[in-house]
Image (cartoon, rainbow, N blue to C red):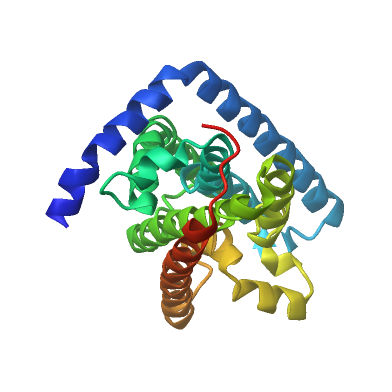
Length: 272
């Protein structure tokens, strides 16, 4: 592990510099997501007010507000641009330079993205968690922070990012065939956002559909970490959800290696 970190540490440093170089773009990107987050807040607040019962599908209004903001935070931290980045390197031919270097293609991208995620963590994580806990304190009048639930959330968040990264790398390899992923990647983001529970909590979907989606890898990206933060799972569900995340991570790592080994044999570069 120390050897791997030593080899790929420069990629992390490069990722930090890249994120810092385009910090204005990053700020506008975050600002746009925050606006969407507040739109969801007012939308769901209207849903609860119109219902008049104080709860909806097992969620109180406070739970829903926490779900909205924690799912936003989780989506930002666990976001991966692997599909677009890999697709662009395949399209412009710069992937050839990586292929001739004595490094693993996936790890080089992973450590670079970890550097880029450093800015998101430093600017967003603690303020958002503090804000959510402050909101719960103001509404309930007591400190609701649960260190054990937060620990499970952190473990799940790490697994969520790694699953998202390797899934996107696998998808990015489709550029070997499709050549350009701009349109299909946009469609993929919309579909995954829904299946991950970012748009609507999976608990709100019909029971049969919701149960199926919980076992798919996409639920591990947002829904699982947020439900762990909310303390909605008992001990058995916690073990099952984290075990399922570990399974999907192993699955996509193996799939990534299989696709990579098959794809490089038929590479066709358009530029470079």
